[in-house]
Image (cartoon, rainbow over the protein chains, first blue to last red):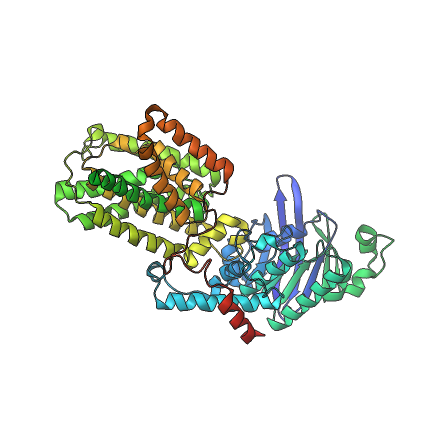
Length: 259
Length: 297
């Protein structure tokens, strides 16, 4: 299958600090790819480069063959890439439903500003429709029973799920998940792995995933890229990675055992 | 007595129109402006000059005043918002803009400088001001409770997450600024045609601050809150006239009390809902949602 995302010699400096150096990797369409590495290895920097939060110092990013490196985030999102955040960025003062509706607006809400100002029949109908649709997305992550709760009233794990639902509502082709299982216990993180696999099939997605829970990564991913100090250390299938000497030395350590 | 009450009401409603503009910009988009008096002045002078010197129809002049104020907002908005100025940095930029615009008014011929424009025909009265206010409230609520308002709210809540919703922050913030400036301009036009006299010193930084104060004490993310605050601020100083020198002191104390007791404002993120006006953000209660849930699963 074709590559949905390619980075070629991607480089990012912050002043004298090298956050990402000459990194090339591909994400094949329809797969789940893992991005692992110690803290500070530059994983989130990759996400920020791909989604346009940072401009690359050098190198190229291709999405479905089109260059997107250095484009604004809204352009990248419209092209079909969405993400979640390591430190959860929900619209805290809004309800669960409103969080999803904002995401749905991108591809679903087509009324014009003047229509909105007089709030004609078409606008009212659309707004109703959006809420119904938003509920479907809440249902996917199991939050449809409390659509009017404030987003920040949710426990941590559910906030992560809401963030995933919000990302899905943008109808992406490629979903970037930044430590979706952070702060979850082993049981919850396996539940999350199931969710990721389910939505990947349901929405015909490609997933790029940063995660520290090795059981989640090994369970979910078709391919894994290992990073250290902004560079690619290794790449391969979970089995290859687990037996890769450089990886074992630099990251997993001697004590690592498969969960 | 009726005339006196009428006067207070008209000025309160004009204030509400301007406050609603700032509500959209500050309460819903999350940017602070200390220069909105400039937009009020732009609307006031445009409308007044058009009716006074050119005999333009009052309502057309009012609309053009709003438009000129809106265009003026682009002059300050485009460079500052493109540079991604936020919070205090943006506020300071607008503060400078407001003062600069006042100086321009004081030195132009058509505005007759600091002497001001006397003898403007007083077309505005309690009736047309009431109708316009009601219209503005409805349009503002429609704007806020639409996709466009949601995009603004998203930018306020978390600008980075908003960008990840495909929202162009620059467009959204500029749209809110334009909208709020148009309302300020309309308020200015009404003000000029109610008072019959305007001069640059009526449009000071402290007037800009008063608008922001009304929005913050009324409640961020609320429409009815700032309306209530604007009404209170127009009536409290009048009610306190008996207290003489203690009037403004009491007024200031009320402000401090509100901020200490209710830092989120009188109605932070809440609405007093009137049927048909406030809409979807808080209505659409669980009832019909439970219905549709049954259909989903």
